[in-house]
Length: 298
Ligand code: RIB
Image (cartoon, rainbow, N blue to C red; front, side, top):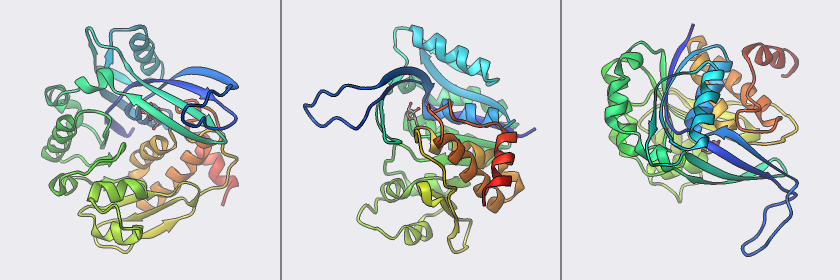
């Protein structure tokens, strides 16, 4: 069984379904409101677990009611929570999300996610050592991300860094990454090349292999010194794109042992299924659903 460690955020998503996005100063009547588990880290952990991986999560929750719900949610998804820490006197991370026409807008309050420390990642060194891949994003403090990259490198374990939300990163960090998985905007930001619109040129410029997500257009990928290659997206009726990138990253990690081409194709399929359903984690499929989807979709 593939073993994955996820170091990242755990949020409660406060989701409003609306006919369209409200403008500044505008009050709009929505259609429905839900509170559902989210956070890029937890989403990736749950997606990988549903695909059949053995998953351990490293992260923080608050000592509020959301924290307990988020903890219980991870446990019920079969995720190992030994390294999920409850922080006293702090709320859990939240994301206020509006979903309209299959698109979303998100405002995240990190709260307890801001308390993930290098020491907490160090305490998880043993499970990182035994992992096939580590997934990490940028919704936790950068020193904890740095610790994750260092420890995984020490232990010879490949890291998939999903640079979201995007920020400029030291080049030296990127050289420790097995795959960077940005969208086009994130790649430009990470490399400090915001004016550059040619994403293939950006991929060539990155000091590490890149798998670049392009929404409906699928993904482009470049390992080592290859030229960027394309995997088409799968057409589905989009209901909610929240968590699609997280699902993609998890699937990439889970299927990586099958080769990069296969892993990217399966990651595109897994994300397409997720987009066709409501909720970040609500739409994440199981491995047999991915297999069935690929049998009926070109
Ligand atoms: O990637 C989607 C996630 O981003 C949401 O679940 C939300 O919590 C934010 O972290």
